[in-house]
Image 1 (cartoon, rainbow, N blue to C red):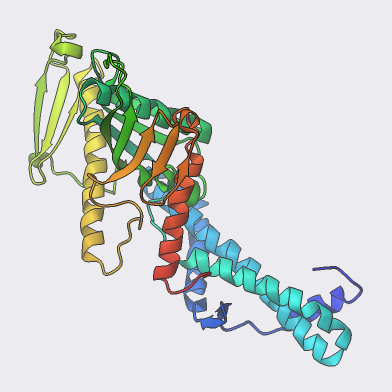
Image 2 (image 1 turned 45 degrees about the vertical axis):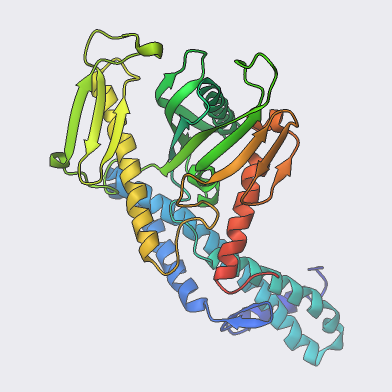
Length: 392
């Protein structure tokens, strides 16, 4: 808005104007203010709770409150921006009825109010409440033998470098290397270094990576230069909090210990430090041998088990709900081929979103942002359409 001599009068009229009763979006009146008012009250209450030192004595509760506070913060900011823009437009319209010179400001102010209303509507569309969580990422070599293991190693480096670009930390929980230096399977924890908005969380970005990743290239083991196709599987789980998210009955666990081994089955440990934990009710099995300490391997295995159980519980809830709360892009079927990495053409293609680019070398070096952005945009569009609003 251009500030003029009439601005003080305009601000006074805005202050005196009544509260709008609905949020206009795309020419329709969407009755959402009751929900917004409840969110504003919840945001204010959580702010008071987080200021109480006693709350932080319970680390799990403090983390949950922090994630919810950041999620509600987007709504609070969008609401305040819309409220100010709507009041400006309303006040200008009222003044224009008495003074024609105000009429020239009305169209621009109304356009700003409409744009702010659209932003508010977008943030009110239900999002994945786990967006702010850290993740457990698992990469497994698939069909293709040694070439698949080499590609799995490429994927692990790609995610590690992407995480570094995002300012996240990566901890390798367990990894089994192949004879040629590839990765048969690996489990890593990716964590944000500081709390931030949910949409900037690790899960918000990496949840789209689950599925089959296909590679087309000439393997190092191929002497005649023929292009082969192989694949590696990626699974991504939101990491469960240590307390509160998943309750595990110790009686439901079968824990086996054994000696860890390296490439080719060669014994690399003379003590039974490797740990295999089976969650009997679900049949989920987690094995760890990366650490020399049996206790450390057990702790890491429990960390992965909690993440898998949390993901399984959420998938069951999503399947039972009328509206799945999981991503519209990320599929439940982890056997889905989601992406192709074509080395001869230096091309990467995402089969869900239609994204295609010829900078595969850069993507494998960690420049994964545009690829993930295409999935985020497709997911947001699907959520907005499901909510019955948005821009055509």
